[in-house]
Structure formats: C-alpha cells, structure tokens
Image 1 (cartoon, rainbow, N blue to C red):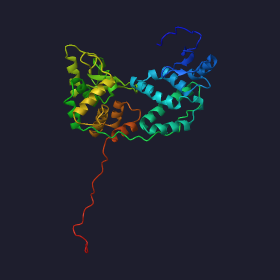
Image 2 (image 1 turned 180 degrees about the horizontal axis):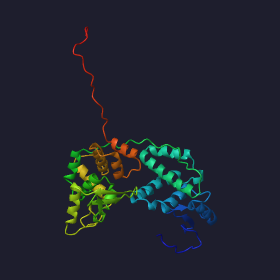
Image 3 (image 1 turned 135 degrees about the vertical axis):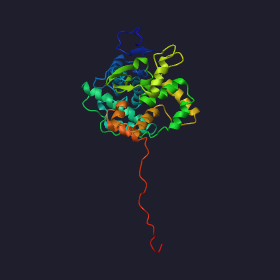
Image 4 (image 1 turned 120 degrees about the vertical axis):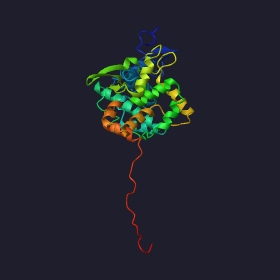
Length: 342
C-alpha cells in the first residue's frame, strides 16, 4: 500500500506538489512533471491516470493492467510483465491508446528487434492482451496488435545428453540434485517444483489399489496433474520424509526455506560452468524429459498432459525441435559389373 498523503488533500490520487511543480506518480514508473499550472496539471493527470478517458495514454492503460490484471498471473509472469511494460512505456507510452495503430507497433517491433527480437515479441504479446482486456471493458473496439507479425524466433534445439546431465549432477549439492531429479522425472516447471513438498503427496485409486502420487497444479496453465511415485522419484520422497526434521519443501535451503527461482537458477548455472559445459539452462531438463519420453515410446497425448500444453501440436514442436532429423541411408544396390568405357 502506498504512503498516505500528508498535505494537499484537494489534489487527485497520485498527483503531488513538490517545489512549486505538480508531479504525477504512476504505480509502476518514475514520476512525471506536469508543470506549475494546477488546472493544466489536473487535465494532464486525467489523461495519464484514467485509462477509460478519451485521451488516456498507452502508459495509463498499462498501469491499469499491471494493477488490476497482471497480479493474478503466476509470479514469474507478473515479474516479466513489469519489465516488459517499462520498454513499452518508453516506446509507446506517450501515445493516446485510442490512437495507437498497427504501424506504431510495427515500428516499435523493428526498433526493439535490433537488440532484443525475442523480448520484442513478448512485449507485443503483453500489449495485445492489454488491449483485449480494454475491448472487454468497452474502452476500445479493435486491437491494434492484430495482424502485426512477430519477429522470427529460432527454436530452442538444445538437447542435453545423458553424460552432460551426470556431469552436473555428480558435482552439485543436494538441493540441486533433488531439483534435477524432480524436473527430469516430472517434466514440470521449476517454479512449480520449488513449491512442491510433502503436502503434494496424495493417494489415488488405481484398480483395487491405492497408489501414491505427487499432485501439481501448474501455476502457468492452471492444469492439474498426478504423477505416480516410483523409481528414483519415490526414493527422493522417502529420503525427504526420513529426515529428522521434515521441511515443507523437497528443494530447500540449509535452513529449510524455499529457494527463489532466481536463486536456484544462479546456483545451477555455477555448477554447469564448473562442469565445463555451456548453453545448459535449468529449463533444458524439462525439454530433455519430454524428448526422452517420446523416444522411449510414450504417446504424445500423455506427454502433452504432463507438460500442460493446450495443443498437442505445441507438444510435438517442443519435442521435435530437440530431435535431429532422421533420414534413411541410400539403399540403392550397386551393380556388380561396371559399364564398358568407364
């Protein structure tokens, strides 16, 4: 919650007087000097603060979205949205949102593509969702992002070999080893696994028997999945439950606290470097898990459910991007006798 106003109670929310000038303080960006004339400052404030205002800016619309919609998303997605909005405000924030046109967005995309083409795509996706929500509220009738193509992205093709996996695993501390096991055996996102613990252990009926599973509700997709406890996944859980003090998370600090995503990925990166490897991110373990399952004959539909993909086509692309193209060798039979004259 913001600090309570100490004076000038006649001013509208987030408009303050400082050294003779009036300043607008947005929720998620730096203060804006609106000048020394109070009437003009209030007019400008209305343009900046109220998305539904006829002359509201893209920056005001983004601030509304970050305040009302984005906080309901997964934690990592919300953090990404905050960063993406900073760049969008710098490039497009000054434009009244009702006047934003596809050519503005295309120009922004091309400018951002010079340094960060992939991030430009994510920023455009955020802006598109912002306008989708604005359409739902009747503030605009069209989405200016519609029809604007994304920058071409190169698919992630990196496949982690078994030998690379063990190089990191064998030198890592126990918390990293546990996360690697969990990721490879469950193919879940690290953000979900970092919150996983004994409370995720459930018992379900299979035929006439009760079996133990790990139950996840994926933050990003909202999908629920039960994963049977067996093999080294079951051993990991048994080892955790056998400790003198059972902590609430399988992957935990020495004090038993939950790791942050940034903290655990930094640790993992250090072990990758120590193992003499490169281009090996923690999310590659999820890709390796799905690819190895596919290679072993697990149906795509089951892998799709495990990954939480809404489309089986997405699952297929996700896996096959990591598989080398497989073609047969030349099977033409050579003639025994060479033609005369050769």
